[in-house]
Length: 249
Ligand SMILES: [Zn+2]
Image (cartoon, rainbow, N blue to C red; front, side):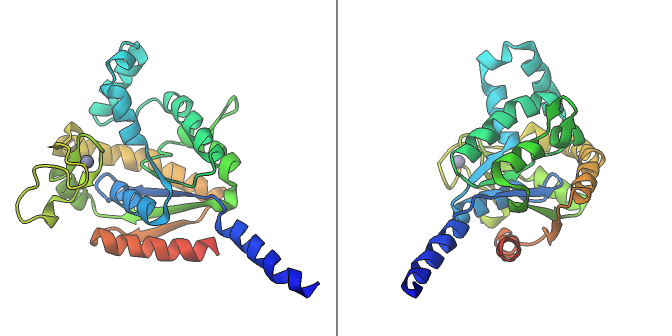
């Protein structure tokens, strides 16, 4: 009988290692959450879903913009406001289900931003409900990147985003300002959303709308691990990985 134990232990260990999970990276605009989610998705081989990028793709689609609701939401988004949570839930929950059903683990940046979007209401499930169904509550991990408001403004003002792959490019890592995305060669843009006056509004909106979400998640039994976000991206990434490996045990 004992000769069967090792193969069985290996089998169950493998199942455990393959267990799908979701990681959610929180942080104010400019805290580096998109960069971190991108780095971690490569290292862990999991899917990065950036809701901001997802919405920007919809807003670039001229056919989609024929829908009055979509063009209205585009205006809200570009002025630094919060898009209608119910509209977001209807679009995103479908994607979350598809990703979880495919067996893929998931990392999110800039998601679960309002109480309504996260927890829904009596007639509609929120995004955390959809994630719990897909991944199991015990397999969802939250990290919050701490950063000062002045850092947010400074980082966003200088931020370059690839117009093709949507990745943020750390301009300060280059001796001269990069002219193309080092990954895909796409044109680099500064975003209207990253203008100082818009960032100030986004920071206010972030604090007023996201703080209650974090409080509610804590009440629901989730641990939100704070990570010092004002360091080089690879240092922040190492800290998140260390914490994630510990939490997953
Ligand atoms: Zn690119």
